[in-house]
Length: 284
Image (tube, rainbow, N blue to C red; front, side):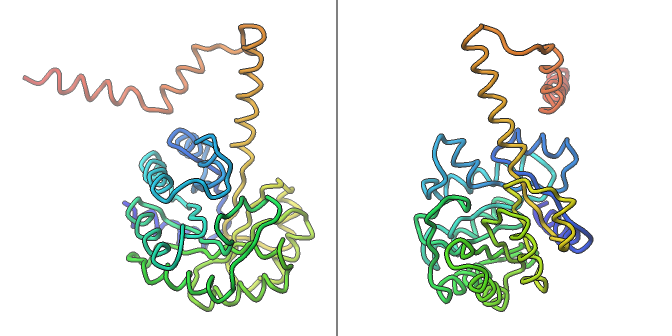
């Protein structure tokens, strides 16, 4: 199944733009699939947040690899996953790729930040030497068993050193064999334009965290893979607002709870479990 998902992701990347929303657990993956998404992105930020922690290098390989497996089993969509810096040196990178691949991931990205890393939109990031980062990509490629597993090289050099350094690193990572490049920290339409022009010869990932209007972004070129945290963050804010309303009044905003409950039973395919139980209970 994992191989099929990997092949499908590679096929889709050649035929148009894929919009992959941030997910961090089974229910968000299921909801994204029901909403019509073509792929999902397992976010390091969201995964850390689900543990009640900040995305500053606190989540371990074991924890996030388990989440990769959970998300992959929860939906039929290809899973693209944040692999941070690979959680250590070259041998750690190789184990990370092996664990992620075994867990079913279709694509993963490794970044060139110094450890402990930070979320790509946090201040005061640092990056490791370009040669070391390039060699991590080589180690990841050597660890890959399924050639259809997509290895994405992410650079956080934009905020640290600017576009010239980004171009230099992207060239080095792609020459090493990376399948795609991912420049994180894009904040403005000018950033999008520079990204599209300067790295036009590479297949690129666009993480639209600032939620820039896609109609305007698309004027500068097509990014094969686009990510967005909006659905996740909006859901969190909605939960906080409703919990606050309940704390203050004992009620939440107007809704027919029976309808919401029925919908979630459908999302979670509860009837399937009842049917299976009935099937075997009736066999004598």
